[in-house]
Image 1: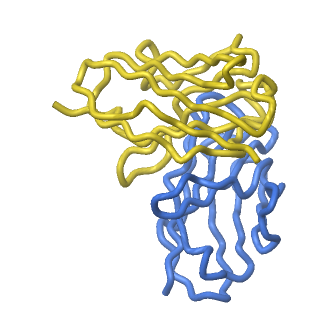
Image 2: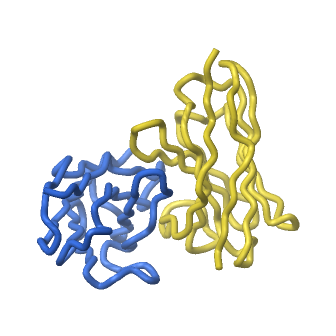
Length: 108
Length: 124
């Protein structure tokens, strides 16, 4: 099973700042099948990025994904008030599909 | 517009059974794999099970294998999750989530649309 480790656990930032979230895999993710999701309290997760760097439909271009192999990054270039949420990475290169434990982006 | 609507959650005693449903609309149901993902209260996300577009291939997390069965009715555009021998640790919100293709195994296995979830509580 591929274990995904997200860091930091919590990121305290102000609106307008840049957010950099990390996801490290315990082994290489096949074909970079790494996705990122945003989840707000009381809501279902929303797909942001798939294939490590492809934005999902309707996702603003301030969200970008990068990385390959075992190291992946989600960057939010300038935080908007609606971006404060929990972010999860997920791999589907092998079964079982696994998620990271999440990074909470909170208002400083 | 893609819509997924889960139902069937509730309170059940340990060892009991429950069947969840997920009604889909807004896309050609049989063209896409569908998945169940759960989230225990205050915890992270856990993949539970996946089924291919045809229903011919199914996959399960080790934590539920042998106790849970995923199935689909492509005429009714509905996904099911039959849950038996339920444990306290199965308590969670269960989401159905659509995949990007008909394939349910390794590969293009992200979740591009999610329902709002149904809460399953296992408690005596």
